Image (cartoon, rainbow, N blue to C red; front, side, top):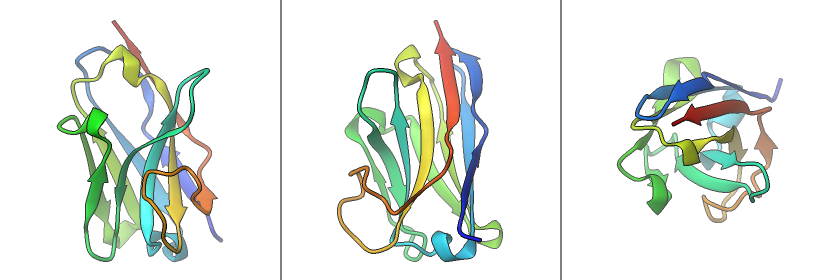
Length: 123
């Protein structure tokens, strides 16, 4: 079955950390990009990080560099997004997505999407 399942979101205080997980079917795990996006209420969906699981190359939005880390677990077909020093502005629904072919890693036009996991950061 082709699917992406996110987990790991929650409510945390500013300064805390979270690790989001995205369990992917094998077919999607080998996509060109496995990406993490977020969407806050009233805002557009934005790409925050992506990884090419074949070569291990990683990509980050400038706004999250140094606080977000994307990684992969080949044995479990899982991509992680570790977030440290959380800020209230990180509050959003976080989505995992798979882009099979190409394009820009940060554009929210990936082929497959998970259902999302909510991250809420209180000050």
